[in-house]
Image (cartoon, rainbow, N blue to C red; front, side):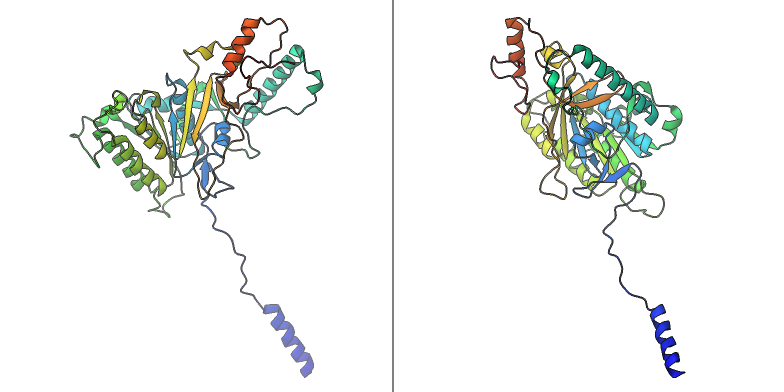
Length: 406
């Protein structure tokens, strides 16, 4: 009886024994809609609105960073990227802050492109692929033995679906715009309200803009001061044509501006606000108008990512047969090193962009082969001279008077 009782006691003790072992879970990032963690450095990433550009930038725009876009000569494509960034915020449910000195922010919001549904996008991709394959079969004249070779992806892509696609030919519906909260800053409306304000030796326009951004971040809780009031969200800040004469800054008109450090001080304080808040900023700047290159170097150093757009509008490349499939070149000047000694660099530096019938895409730059046997010597020489304009990274670059021949 005693043995049986002892056995029962031992059995009961084994059944109720618990351990203090707990699985060690790593530091988990906050689940914020429209974001995903980066595999390399663990930062939260958000899409800039162009998936191919996200791939070039290392997966997307990190929260708390600043993306500087050097505007093209006429500001056509830079304003389009600006609207893509804001449209992605609307679709993801993020809050927006739109600042401009030229176009009223309300007009910019109304002109945002409409998102493409997944079914429509897949249908258009299938139709485009079928049309391209038919054209290739009809125009196949040489290199028939390479038909079964794997095709090179022209657009930088990743296996993880991130971001959305947009139709440039359509405007976003008012119902979708009413579902998000957005803040505006229009400089002509702000200047008459108060006397000239200078803060940290910045001009009045930059000082008011900085104070407006700071108030939105603190009052709406993007700095983490009200963590339990509502679900965490992202603030997307967009500033259009910063540094132009419309912002009361003379760096674009003279080599020795009056407030030479005004712009750089603004960027320095802005980065401090971004670093300690759930926000990301995109700034377009007419860098081709800034005469003092030292200022532009400081601006680049104070930015996390710098991308330049070189449009073919009004240049010789617009009619050059080498660039007939593209509308401009994309130059990646700087990519951040976040929690790492190295940065995510794209596998190619020869990038171009083109505006299709409905979409803006970033693609790898490829030189077309010389398919004709009756090309005149002068035209071949022109092609060879035009090929020198490309960077040395392109594998099909012609050197000197040589041309690609099969």
